[in-house]
Image 1 (cartoon, protein in one colour):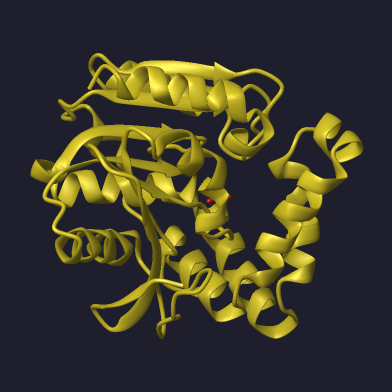
Image 2 (image 1 turned 45 degrees about the horizontal axis):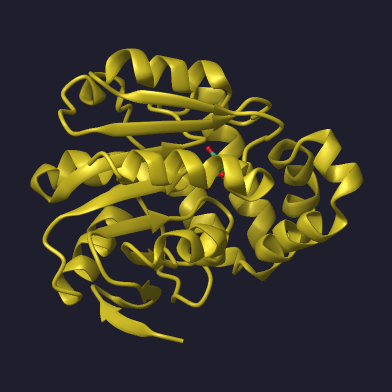
Length: 263
Ligand code: MLT
């Protein structure tokens, strides 16, 4: 494992390939192995950096709330340590929330954005309450209940019934997540800023990807982002739900590689 002392924690990360850098930020409650297939597809032409966000994978957890801004600062500090001034910043779902926070905080460090299965809006009041309940549940009961409840929302019914290996992979990723890391991120997502106004000011190329059957961040959320981010491109991934990069790797990678060749 490669890790580095960043801010107050040890942060684990992957850094492979050579060429223009792209940073890939995983969603909740996953880890950097979410990006294995993208890392493999990109690293012959690009330098791919994928951190385990604080509290996830092999990175340390921190006390309290892991805000999106804090995670964005971790990404910036990792880029500093790796001598990467500017990169394509990509994120899936919570990774997209972090990518948007990063773009707002460090605009000069963003060459282009990849926003996968994510949204610009903040949580509703009800959504925030649910996050708090989930955080308590994670801490008191562990990740199994959360994983079982999330699975049918993450994958299409077709994937759930026909691709047991993928179902197991996604479930195992969630089960490996430390409850305190999950809880900290849930509280962080609950208090994240609404980026709806901010995204209208984005002036770098942006690729928006979403699974046609995404039940967590539906296509409509991506359409809203696309209508606000000038010149952005939206690709809807067919036969995919929320983890569209895993469910339809080829479609996802083709869109990503096509986009990267233009930026
Ligand atoms: C994720 O996949 O990162 C989360 O489902 C996002 C969310 O809960 O808003």
